[in-house]
Image 1: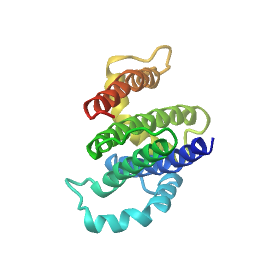
Image 2: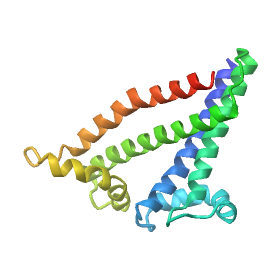
Image 3: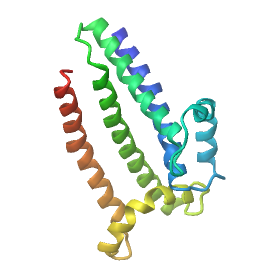
Length: 192
């Protein structure tokens, strides 16, 4: 029972921190407006580690690679810490470091899909209740590149844009089918 509580704490804190780092990365990629509560929160939570990492990990092509590498490293640390707790309790065999590195990439993709889904849901709710919220332009900047191809092909039905719903369904299918398959493939290849 103590091991479950420890796994919960590790997963919660490291998982949320990796998600916030990814949000920071995507806000920069999408050139989202910086003057909003979400950006201020993300900067306040992550600046302590991103700024020193930028001295070591340079950007590339306008991308802040230090933030992305830190998100990957956080997912890597989460996987290693979780496996260590499981090894102490259950006695599982260790996985090669390459396995954790590849599984951390799969975790980054999974977390990115959850961020997209959360942004879609928040954007839809805000468009109904507070369309002029300071967070609305940020959410629009995050989801617009994914919604536009669908909006070009699927016209509104009765003045209702169904593209967010279709994108959520597509993201859910990827999370249900592709992500577990990739995780299983990596674990199978490396004997984890």
